[in-house]
Length: 121
Image (cartoon, rainbow, N blue to C red; front, side, top):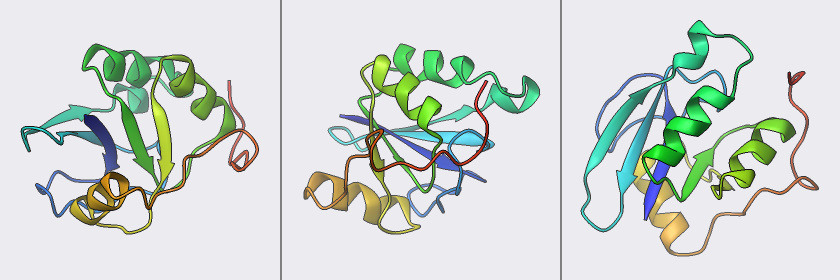
């Protein structure tokens, strides 16, 4: 499984979660089968309010799920429309969140349990 994790800076598996999916400077893509990780720079920061850029990149990398601190409903919908499940982080640490996801301890976010956050365009 490929898991996306929004981060401020790239620090291996001790990465600290960025609080907002859309505004994260980069994403760590972690493969649970091989324990390999890739870093994807978030081009969205250069194209404000265009969530399609990171979502398309995540689909290209065959991301199955993302773990977030916060996400707007429209961003959640766009990820879900591309087959990417979104889970609420339990910890700030990447490694602990991945273990929690694998152990079934993270809550999958839906339109009903996600706040709007900020205006979507």
